[in-house]
Image (tube, rainbow, N blue to C red; front, top):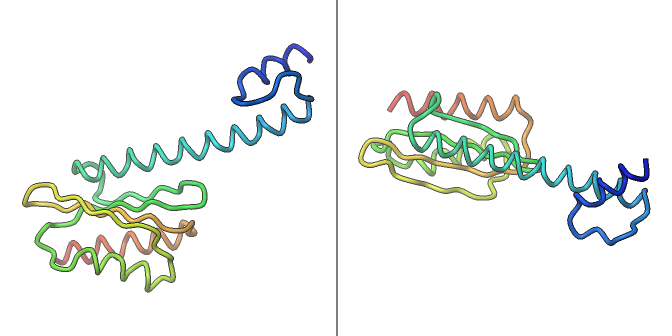
Length: 137
């Protein structure tokens, strides 16, 4: 067990040498949680990039720890698209933390919205509402 604790301790950044086994386990738990958050964030960026390139079904929602990242590819000709997307989140009582817009030539606009963590069923309603509105353009 001592060898395993020492090996685990070597994998944890900024852990002082000769840390107690309790500290090694505590730091390992914190490090794994941090890595999970980073993995979720990278997955969100991957999904956003796929939507911006035109992949997927037009919308992606990814939970990233205490935040959710929503990306949707909308017709560029949809006037006021950004405002309408943000209004959907507001109608559902979801706090919007950040919004980004990218244009894909003349055909599509990619909108990404980062929000506080939201229950999956609410995010699905938001996703459907935005996609249905975009389809009617």
